[in-house]
Each structure stands twice: as C-alpha cells, then as structure tokens.
Image 1 (cartoon, helix red, strand yellow):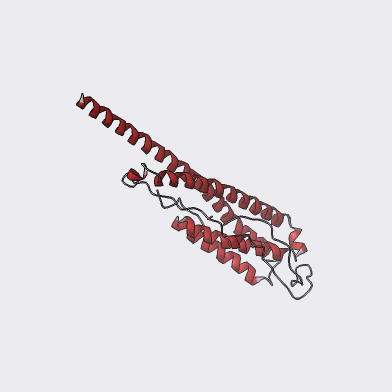
Image 2 (cartoon, helix red, strand yellow):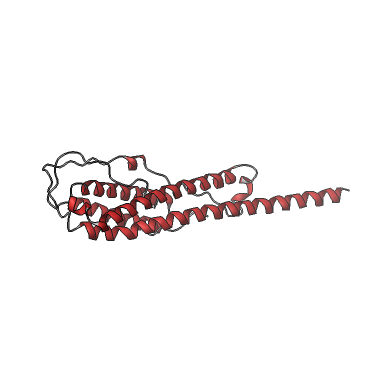
Length: 220
C-alpha cells in the first residue's frame, strides 16, 4: 500500500514537472516570437533612414545639426541592437524617434522638399513603421509580463531557475520620447532657403525606438 502511494506521488510530480516545463517553453517561445516582430520593424526603419537622408540633404543643407543628429541616432540604434538588450535598444530607439521628429518638424519649412513624392512616401512609411513598432512593443511586453509571472509564482519559481529559465526585460518607452520637439528659427523661410520664425507643428510619427539590427533578448 505504501509503495503504491509512493509511486502515485512520484507519477504526479513527474506529470507536474512535464506540464510546468512545457508551459514555460511555450511562454518563452511566444515572447521570443513577439520580439522578432519588433526586430523586423526596427530593421525596416533603419533601412529606410539612409534613403530619407539622401532625399533631404539637397534641400536642407542649412540644417546640418538636425541631419547629423538623425545619422548619429541611427548609428547608435544599430549598435544598441547588436547587444540584444531591450533596455539599451529601447533607449537608443527613443533617441532615434526624437531625431526623426525634429527632422520632420524642420521639413515643414521647406515646401519644395514636401512636394517631393519620394520624401512624402518615406515619411508616411516611417510613420507607419513606428506605429507597427509601438503595437509590437505592447504585444511583446504583454508576453514578457505573462512569462515573468509564471517564473515568479510558486511553485514554478522553485524549479524555473534550475531548468534554465530566466526573466525577459521589458521594452520600455521613454516618456520624454513622446514630447513634441520645439524648434525655433530666426527668419522667414523660402523654398530651399534658411528656416524662418515660430514654433513648428508636431512632427509626423510616434512610437519608440524599442530597438540597427537588433537580436533577440538576451534572457532565455
């Protein structure tokens, strides 16, 4: 009788371990898949920016600082993406979003540039890409939350570490990233000429950073 009870207990423990392990694997795979969607959109944005810079340089020669800010922000985002760290990627992508907003704000003072189909198409595509990044960010963070809860609750937390499961980091949006850039100029603009007075309207686009080519999160 005692042997039978022991066997039943062992079988129940094994079944619980199998069920828990499979559940953690499923949650981890969903989280990694959600990250891959962010990664695709970030790469798409990084690939679009060189074309954008080539388009605007001939019309915005007086805005060297703004153009350099976008170029440097993209380079930093690519470098951050290589780390695979969602926190670093998010910070770098936030800065890239801010620099792009400033660029689009400045472009309001260049009617000839805004009349170019290539520029408007790139602007619309980048805006749509940032919307997709924001959606993917929320989807990823939701999966991270559910996965991390599994790891941190009893009794799963007693064995998750031993089985090699670790928490994922959230892909956070910086509150400052959502602020509308205020850009002021001294003279009235002319087509292709120096910028003019007043605060510019909000730049097109919203969303993060997220996150060069970014790899999957380091925590697995």
